[in-house]
Image 1: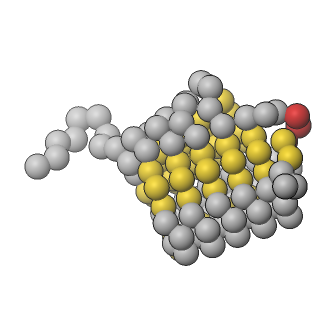
Image 2: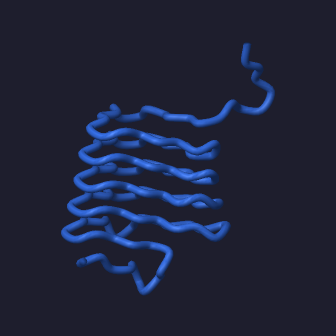
Length: 120
């Protein structure tokens, strides 16, 4: 197994041949973990904000520049996914994204209802 830890931080596990831009931010507010699979690409300015729950990104997935991943209840992203620049993936309520999903740039995937909104 050729996974390694970023900057000796055991909360961040990265698979083989994965490319992570030097300015990617990993922010932990509570105990959690980020696992990024093999052959992934994490673009410039991507930010992970973890307030609990594990973030799991499977093999061959790309997060383009300035994506935002929020996790409170967990984020699970399948293999061969592609997220365009400035996409927001909100795992506040927990979110699972299957294999082969493509999301256009400036899109937002939310797992909760904003304060004050009512659902039928």
